[in-house]
Each structure stands twice: as structure tokens, then as C-alpha cells.
Image (cartoon, rainbow, N blue to C red):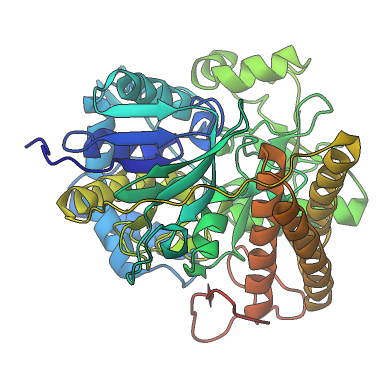
Length: 533
């Protein structure tokens, strides 16, 4: 059924897997506008190498996935959400394949080639070589670009959500009426009305010095929702990927966990393996264990990185299954069939985000958050590898259904955006750069893999000063891309640090030297707007 009622479009902020899933489904019935602050081909999805959890309707497949996710989540997984996603999981790969995504096949068995990743008890990761995210994104973006009901607005950065106070005639309901968006080319801000707004902006990795995330990961969706009064949850659980390439010419290239799943080992310069000291699962322990182990070894020995050794794997196997990693490293002078790969942990994935229902709905009726922007409770205290793409598709399909069935629309007129004075000279630009640089230094030094209460309090004090400085800049000047990103990152940094201080234990990805034991009852960390620590 095609919606013939004249209405405002559904606005989706972000062009990764979760946003595209919603766009393609909702566009069957409603007009959709996809907003991306840069090139739609740049997102965390595009950088995802490993793959997506492949589930069937078989009870054993569901049961083992549920157990592995609970184990990784360390007592904080929402069981109702997990059960729903596990039982709906078969739809994810099915939906992607039906849209034309081609996954690697096991030629002998004539079925999907499934690989093992850390924390999984059986091989269940469907992949497209070692560039799964790129394979998915290329197909879905092409579909979106040619869809008659979808308009993609590039170089469009959302400044703020439109609330009651932004209307020419004030209402009394708790809704969002659209967005104010900056065209980063013309530098003009305009209002874009919407019946529903979906925040699918990805994660917050750029708040740290070292991250596997693309440059777009500046916490935009979380900050937008927070400023509009939404709750956030579990932001202390930042997953650090154990193995990012350590190289002067490339600071954000991920070395897929699937390489360790295939048999690659972690070593010191002298060839000594060290994971045996920390976990019986060795290199295939959950990511938090592996990342903390590497961090400890680096600090213990005063070294900048460790090595990942894939030399024992057959060359043909590496070239066939890891062509992206093999090619990238070779261009940088590292032949992974002969040389060990220097690696370091880096900020990778936020298990927390805007608190939502399983359908992505926030505490605001027509505002949705999905993908890494959201916290559904699936990941708990630590995300099981490759559950992220699974969550993107399943919750994307569920959110789409909710939006299509919603009757909400409005004919409100939105006030014109109040223009401030533009930036002048280099000093203003330098001030923004210095704020961002200081923020990343604070977060990496005090709110990283291993934390303490004293360090967290120091971080919060300094972040609040930065927040005030950036807020003054935001009120004084007309927005530009750099200023908006810093504003959003400072908000996210404060929320991460507040969340870490609220958790008086060590659990999953959060390790506090002053609270190393786990509490008997695991509870999510929920922060409401205007809450104070």
C-alpha cells in the first residue's frame, strides 16, 4: 500500500546500514529524506571487515547465540531484546541477500562460508571476504540513490532538532517537527520539516586519540537526542578493538578479529605469546579481555605496540579471505604472509547510546535512534563480535514497521534559524582544533581502557570547562562543521565520564582500579537530562 496522504517526509540522519535499512523499507510507503554530513559512502558500516552474525530458525542456532551474547555482555544484556533479535536474526542475512548483497560461499558445501570470531562458540559469521561492510553499503546505497521515494541530501549536517519552542505557534505535545540543518558547502542553515526523525549517525570513536572509526563518528545523534531531553544508557562501555594497525601513515585501519579466529597469534617482539597468561581462550577471548591484556603488556614493558602473527596461515588462504588487510598492509610495506603486523587497541564501538525500545523509539514519540547511536540493551557490558550489523538490520526493520504504522503528522510552521556572526581569522579555527585535541587527550589518558575514580573526576572537571568554552563559541558564532562536531563530542565525553563514575564496579568493558569487583546485581547506567554527579 502506497501512502497517498500529503505529509512531511521521514528524515533519516545517517547513511550507514541502520539508516539505509529504515530508508528502503519506509520508502515503500512514505517519502524519505536521507541526510549525511559528507559523502554517503563514508560510514562505520563501510569500514566493517568481519561480517554479520548469521542465524537460522533452528533452536540450537538461536540457543547458542543467546548464550554467547549473554556471556559477552557480562550480566547486563536485556534478555527480552536479545531473544527477539536472535529469533528474528534469520531475516537479516535473508533481507541483505534479497537486496543483492553477495556473501562468500563455501564452494564445497555450496552454502554461506561462516567463520569464527572471538566470544563465539561456533562459526556463525557470514562475510564478503574481509570487506563485508563495503559490500553491503555499495549495494544498499545504489538502491537508495535510484529509489523514487528517497532523496539523499549530501553535505547536510543537523545542527539541532526542531522542538516546540522553534515553532511559530507553540504546541503542547512532546514531539520533534524536523531539523535545522547546515549545508556544509554554502554554510546556510535551513529548517527541514519531518513527520518522524531517525537518528542513525553511528558512534563516538573520535572522542579518543586512536580509533578504528571513520571521521564521521562524532556522536552527533547522541548529542542531538540528549539536547532534546532523551535519556542515555551504558555509555561507560566503550569497546576498544584489540588490533588496529600501528603505523605512522595509517592510524585507523582495523585488523579484523577474523584473522585471530583463523589462527593468528598475539606476540611480543621476541615472539613470546602472552594471551595464555590472561585467558584460557587466548586470542579468541572477548575483546575487552584481549584489549586490556595488550594494554597491560604495553604498559608493563613500556612499548608502543605488540604484534599479530599470521605467518602460520597459508598464503593462499590469507589472499582469498583477507584481501583488504593483505593489500592495505602490503602498500604500507608489510607483507602479512611473511611479516608480523604491529597492532594497538583503539576505540571501536559504543555499547551504550540513546535509550530506546526494541523498535528504536526514544522517549519522544516520533524520534527514533538506531544502530550504534542507540542502546537497546542487546550488547550489555560488552558487544559480541559481529552482533552490530545484525542489530542494525533487525532493529531497522522493526523501526520501519513502527514508523509506517504511525499516524503522526503535522502542519506546523518552523521559525527561521537565528543567524550568528561568522568566524573571522585563524584564531577561531585554532581554538576549535585545540578544544578537540585537548578533549581527545583527556579521554585517552583518563577515560580509556583502564580507569580510576580519581582520573575520572579530573577528566570530568576539565571536560566541563571545555563544554562551557565550546558552548560559548556555539552561541557566539554561526555553525560550521568543525564547531558542530566539537560541540557534540564534548557532550558525549561528559556523558561517558559521568556514566563511568556512576558505575561502582568493574564489569565488561568498564574497568575501574578502585572498584575491581562486580556488584551482585547488574543494572544499566541511565542518565537523564540535567542530572548532576
